[in-house]
Length: 181
Image (cartoon, rainbow, N blue to C red; front, side, top):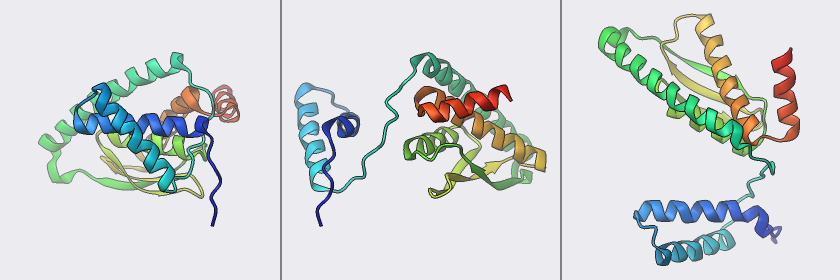
């Protein structure tokens, strides 16, 4: 079975990412180590089938910087909330599994949204349904239906931020239309 040849333009982000991961794993970003990592990345990409990561072709730094700052603030606030819950409420904390259907069907955006949510203390992705772009999350401190809806809105807000940064033009228009509605 022959596989479709992936263009260098499509494969380049994957190769760059693999080289960065290689350097990080070895904690060595010397030119020789990065060159060896690049050779390994090309070998891995050519020998093993990896589905291409479809990129939208756009990246907006003007949205990325505030998003990163918002993310850091959410991590700090959530960390304090988790500390409070652990010390003051302990085993009495209620949790829930919450399904959140995303707007985007791009693997990259679904994955990025899941990672951002999982990096904020208090929630963790337990399952992803690629066919419907639904994230199933384990969430701490859920006491009511209103808490569930607030959490869903937070996830969709994070997804909207990621769409503004790197989503397709169609997804960006959908987010803008929802914001004005």
